[in-house]
Length: 131
Image (cartoon, helix red, strand yellow):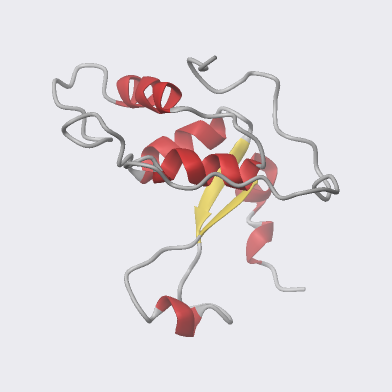
């Protein structure tokens, strides 16, 4: 069945993912944000209905919701991704395209990189520290 929102069980366990096949959802329609979240989290935690509920919470008084396509078929903005991750005790931080080995790749076209980290890592800024 479909879920109405992110689970409240807390963040996924730390450490390497379990051995076995990689969980992957192919994109269908305008649901790339839903599929990206599920692929990063390696399980089907989010649905279109859950993303729509987040949109309603982000803009409860809006007749035309600014966080998804006008037709309500997906195309969710980054605020939906961030709110979904926050519901699991995670966060998304923007990768500074001026740093490191991804600079040349990011310069090839319109794209962004988001790092998914725990809230503690986001708040401490430890993801910025080099090894």
